[in-house]
Length: 115
Image (cartoon, rainbow, N blue to C red; front, side, top):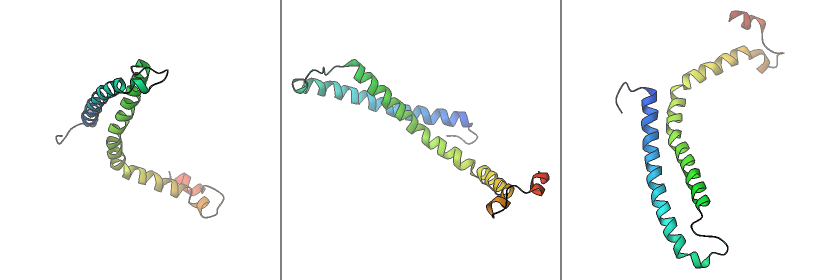
């Protein structure tokens, strides 16, 4: 990651790296699941070991969870970067509703006119 990288390029890089890891794990898991399905075929009753819908659903669910997990570090960085903004918004609301929080009857008119 270079200095001066845009937010979009960082998100793209993190998502691509996370997706690559998920895809590799998914491919290895599918190969192992298909081979294990053939080994336990005699133990299955009224279920085929090569059920395409089950494999498709599992792969889709794992991809979605993997993409979400890859997005978490990016979202955490965004939150920390905007923490000052969130703190300023919170202090603004605290000032606006100061009378209400201290047992008053709502927003003070002088505070609203100051905005």
